[in-house]
Image (cartoon, rainbow, N blue to C red; front, side, top):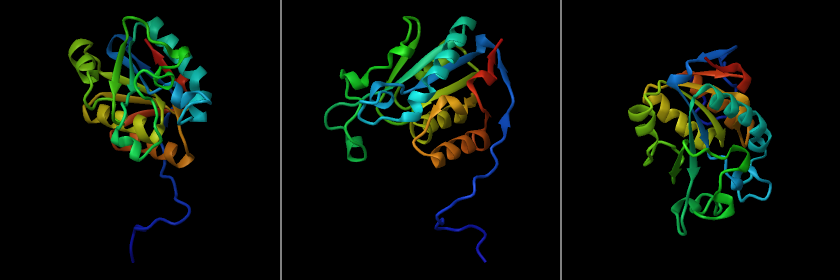
Length: 208
């Protein structure tokens, strides 16, 4: 008898996700990474609108404000494509360089001393300067990740952070998902495989 169904049925049991009640992080060793909070994903008129990302926006803003006040390093990823990008074979055209949809949302606009990493694949570390600043310039040990979409760019960025041995923290209500399955998969993998700390709310993350 097989122990695992090689072809899943219509429903799949979600393994346990071990949520932490609270996480306290030393501000001087921590970075907040905000993934792809751009108009094409967050605004209702965007090319690939994710309603859950817009719903999470006020919670991300509160976390960002608290992180800035505590002196936490802030980094953004900004998905960026040019005409003819092969990714458009999988997705409708989106976040084309210089367009309105490519811009980061007004509510989370970077300040001059904050890092914005242009990326052209799902992983925020791939081909960008993110690791250089986290490891070499800022000497960061802990990475808090919020943004969208949960099982695509958020998960691939979180995976790269975990594989680089950063302590990874993810608040579930600060991550925009397309489906419940995608959200559950992301939280499970972050907490089990990389491994990281998953909390339910952005308010469960505190900087000290």
